[in-house]
Image 1 (spheres, rainbow, N blue to C red):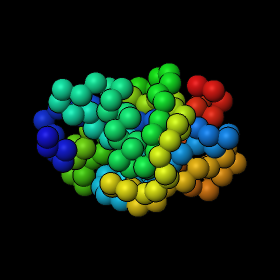
Image 2 (cartoon, rainbow, N blue to C red; image 1 turned 90 degrees about the vertical axis):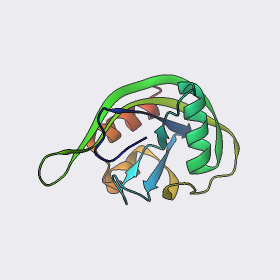
Image 3 (tube, rainbow, N blue to C red; image 1 turned 30 degrees about the horizontal axis):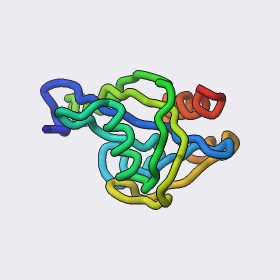
Image 4 (cartoon, one colour; image 1 turned 45 degrees about the vertical axis):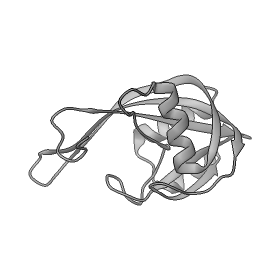
Amino acid sequence: MIREYPTRPILGVGAVVVSDGRALLVKRGKEPAKGVWSIPGGMVEVGETIHDAVVREIREETGLEIEVGGRLQVLERIFRDGSQRVRYHYILIDYRAVPVGGSLCASSDAADVGFFNARQLERLGLADITALVVRKALDGG
């Protein structure tokens, strides 16, 4: 799958994992958005259900096993280069989830991982749409 300069949008999934009033976020370790805090997730693989993709991606990035809840948001993320060509184009489906096992650790393409309450979100510099989805999850989805 060609992610950079794709010929069509790529389907991705994510989950806002909520525990004790805090949301799990990852600091991206790779482009796009390297160094930015965001909702953990990734691409759906051919032959994989959306549900299985969410579970796999959260396990790969954070070490946690989750129970997937309701859908929070469907959105697009389009990143353009200096000449305005589309460098990345994702259609993302984000879900609310709760942890049911595993051990929290940054792995796969995550540089860091942590749980944050609503007050802490502002200092993370989240993209507006990311903050909206996280707050929605913290409010119960």
